[in-house]
Amino acid sequence: MDSAELDKRHVWHPFTQMREWNAGEPLVIVEAEGAVLRDAQGFEYLDGNSSIWTNLHGHRRAEIDGAIREQLGRVAHTSFLGLTNDVAPQFAFELLRAITRSDTPEGWRVFFSDDGSTAVEAGLKMIHQARQQRGEKERRVFVSLGAGYHGDTVGAMSVGHSTVFHSAYRGLMFGSREVMSPACYRCPFNRAAPERGMDARLSRKCEWECVGAAAKALDDLGDAASAFVMEPRVQGAAGMTMHAHGYLSRIAALCRERGVWLMLDEVMTGFGRTGAMFACQHEGVMPDVLALGKGITGGYLPLAATVASAEIFAAFDGEHSEWRTFFHGHSYSGNQLGCAAALASLRLLGTVHPMAHVRSRGEFLRVLAQKFWEHPNVGDVRCEGMICAIEIVEDFVTRRRFPAENRTGFRVSEAARKHWLITRCVGDVLVLMPPYCVSEEQLAQAVDGLWRALCGVVPAK
Ligand SMILES: *Cc1c(COP(=O)(O)O)cnc(C)c1O
Image 1 (tube, rainbow, N blue to C red):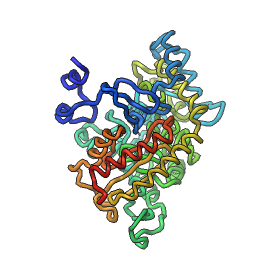
Image 2: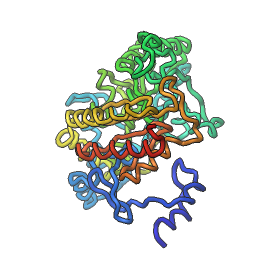
Image 3: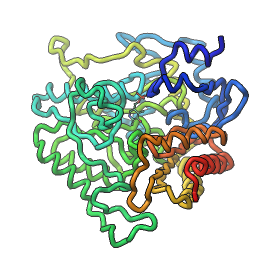
Image 4: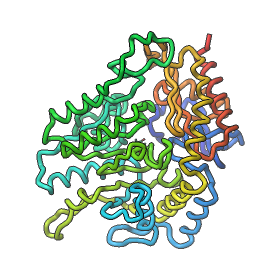
């Protein structure tokens, strides 16, 4: 039986209504190279969302393939419990050098797990336990951004604020204090400059009301606030919403003044996606905890890391009998194949795809994407580094959304496949974020394909 048939009979797909899936014909990817995916029938598609935001350098990149093969020639995986290996510590050091931009990243620690959710989960547990062991038992509340998404484990869901994803599991979640997302496009204070058409008098000067709201929440909580958790600069699953530059550094200052830790989720934004190695580096912010995943292996293997500050690590120091140990770990912690891929990927970020390259490709995409403004139902075109998001709306003046049941964004993404583009929308936000190896020609094809798909589903009149 072929894979498509077996899939329909036996497989359960993530975030998928399986009745609908089983009524369709699945696209079976059999190989890929660079930014191009090939299906079982030999058709080729541009990997327009970097295989759900994971791939950085393209598929079958010789350096990463080679590093994995070389590692496979020695050993694929051994336990990180009670043992170490000759790859994970090397990667930890190189990772910390990249994060701290210092050759002596003393004090920082890297805790390995398997995916973004577990990186976040470990971070939350570290913070919670550190607070107790420091005698700060009242500091129990996590503060996090509206529409934030940090993964699907119960802890990660608890600091997330996505109604659609989380409502069925509310009974399991511990809850967190939500503060407004600083996404400018739907600024409730209407402070963001109108992009087009709207009466300029309706939009007032931004006075960082969003920062004020966060300060108020932190002040209300007082000594109950443990940590502020957020995706810096770009909130992925919220709809690639983008923050005003300067929000992050202001939040970091608020946290520092109040003794609240800052945990940044750079699972999506890390490793150059926003045009800096880490999004927090755009604003000179060093978090207390940093969660990394997705692009960490260049999109090859499931590996994730939770990076902790010296202060947090110190809270676990003690004799065995004091039971201050971090009681958390995973079977594949420190996996050698993953770490070998991650080391190779990190090197490529210093050589083949340095930040200047990512920024210039991103700028090329940003300029091309201005075309979308010509469509009357495009409400916003926003870009950061190699992320471009096109938000489609029923009415661009009022920013009214299409009815959710129309699934307009979904239909556009599906239609894009006929134009040799694979991407996945977030609600009615269309996403273009290919691997960094994408050529200018491929970017032009992607924009053209998405434009045609959009006009096919929502005629431009
Ligand atoms: C994808 C994502 C996660 C979850 O990562 P998984 O690897 O899917 O568990 C967490 N945070 C952010 C910001 C993400 O984009």
